[in-house]
Structures are given as C-alpha cells and as structure tokens.
Length: 333
Image (cartoon, rainbow, N blue to C red; front, side, top):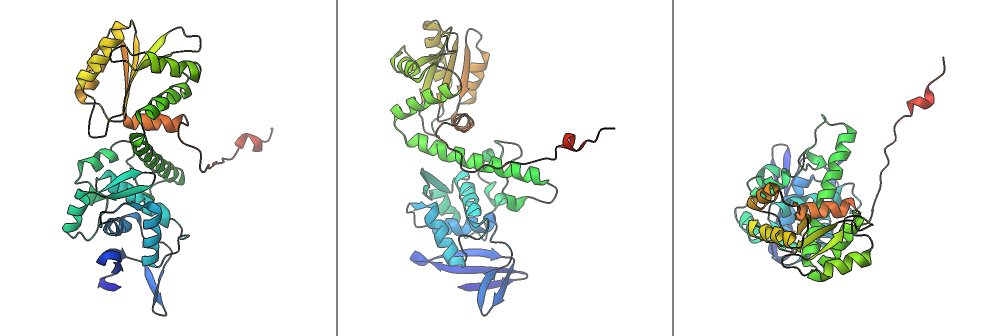
C-alpha cells in the first residue's frame, strides 16, 4: 500500500487485481504495531464511491457481494463492521444513478463508458457534488423530497425520526431501481402477468382468472385488454402495457392511438403502463382529453406501486417505533 499524507487526511492507495489501484481518503485512523485499524467508523459512502468504480474498471460483470468482500479485504475491514455493507450499497446506487455503472439485474453490474471516461480524468474523489454534473443524477435527486441523502451527509439539525425517514426513502428507491431492472429483463408474458397481479393487488379485476382472461383476449387495436373496475363488473378499465427500455420514451402518438382504441371499444377509462417514461407531449395530451379518463403509469410509478402493494417484494426487516401513551399515565383528579 502507498500512503500519502495531506494535512490531517491520509490517502491510501491499495493494489488490486489487474494492476488496478484504489484511492481512499481516511480522516480517522490510528496505528497499532504497524497495522492500520479503523477508529469508530468505517469509510463513508462517498469515500467508497471512487474505490468501487476503480475496482470494476476492468469492464467485467461484478456482483455486489464480490465487490463488498474485495474492498473489505483490501481495506482490512471485517464485513461485520457497522454500516460498511450499507455504505457500499449507497455508493453503488449513486454510481448507477449517475450512469457510471450499469445494473444488469439480480445484483450484477459493470462499469459504463461514462464511468471509464470519468476514471481517465483521474479524479481524487467522487461525491454527491461531483455527480451533480450528470443530468440523470440530478433527476434522481429531484424524484423525491427531501432528495435521497445517505446518512453520512446528514447533519445534527435532523431528528432521529427524520434520519430514519430519509434512510427508509433511500432504501425504497434502491429497491425500486432493482425491481425495474428485473422487470426489464423479464419476458413480455411475464410483464403481462405482472400487470394483472398489480391491478388485482390494487383492488381491480375481480379474480385472477377472469382478469387474466380479459387482459389476454382483448386484442382491439391499441388495447392489451381490460379488467373490471370492481368485483361486480359494473364497468371496465382498459389497459395498454409497454415493456420498453429506459431510453425509449412513450410519446403522444402512442397515447393518441390508445385513446382512439378506447373510444372505439366504448370505454371511458384506461390505464397506460410502461417500464419507460412518457414524453411531456404525451403527458400534456393525456391531461387535455375530456372524452375519456386516461392514467399514465411510468417505470418509476410502476415499481413504487409494486412495493406499496407487495407485488414481487417481501418484507425483510421491520421496525416499530413506540411512543409514550400519555393517556395511560393520566391520574384522575
């Protein structure tokens, strides 16, 4: 290892396979018998972002488990070190949202050409401010309020409840991103089943058998099928589902075709789902029509609905926050 001292900060350059190196600023370490040990906290997420990108610079497919073990070994950390695995995951999420690495589903990913180009500039660090130069990362930060903020950036102005809320939102967003990757890899038939399961979980369609039959047999031009709005079947909701890549947005012509088919079938309500996104023209057109009601659900909304209604996800861990029951302690008189 090569150690460079700059004021109170120590940068450690550790050799990695394939003649690669990683640079990690360590603001808080101490020495014992010539061995480095961590003092109180492992590296913050933004101190791990650059080493992670450097590790996957070979262009091969890597897994989060593999990278976590490799960086822990190179940094002399135990995988049980508090928050280390969580911060590696945050670093991966930030790199992915900035387009520096590409997720391949099921925990697999590799560096992108943009990531390679960034490494060619030999950055000394990659933090949130650095990543704000990429429009995709800016959009990611603006998807929710407050913006996704790892605990390492959180100051003392936040209450413990606010910290937990932020962490929850970050984990939920990461889960939604992974869900969308998996859905994009699935077959069209699987996506059709997913749409059925989601609509049923939301309370539409009656039974799965009747909903599946309706969705698979419609075939009116521009319509994939319909589900019952209620269990009595008093009205129908027509559905169009497009499993398109992130880089292929759904435009106004597709929505116009859907509306025309909806009117031709005598329908009044429709849902257009896509794994991609909608252009502003498509959104404006859907909002302007008065003859029918059309709801647009893009990839971001799709995965959030899947999480909310328990489709394709299972609970992993649950926290219950207790408060004092003040009524219990009230004394008469």
